[in-house]
Length: 69
Image (spheres, rainbow, N blue to C red):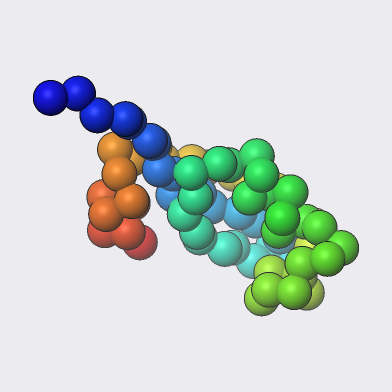
């Protein structure tokens, strides 16, 4: 039986302000990076903006992505 394949990604960001790192997971890298750098960001990452994407790891599913980090 065929199914719909939805890749999941683990990503590493580096703060251009502090040099610190952030690791997360998403199914849309570009959208998630824009969210981290948005002026409307209310998450932990707002204080260390701007963020640069330094590495991504493609996973077959969300469970596999969660196991990486």
